[in-house]
Length: 99
Image (tube, rainbow, N blue to C red; front, side):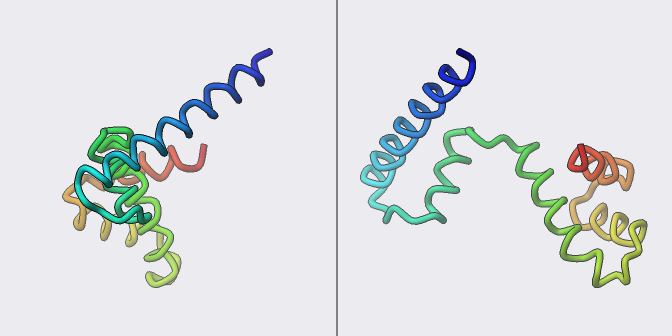
């Protein structure tokens, strides 16, 4: 029963999301491209600021960690400076990702 309800929710969500994105692009005279879809999700607040920050930090960590000779502390401090955050905050973001 739960799976059927979940599938129904996802189907409705996807259908409405696509229709609303199509309308958004028509209203703003934009092509229906992935870059515009990302802007749409952010503009409609379907992706929050915390999610964006966490994703950016996690992905950038993955890029910088090997460049920093696999030194976690150095990479975390670099990210903290770049995002104007404390190293503790960056560590917390990375710990959340591991869960």
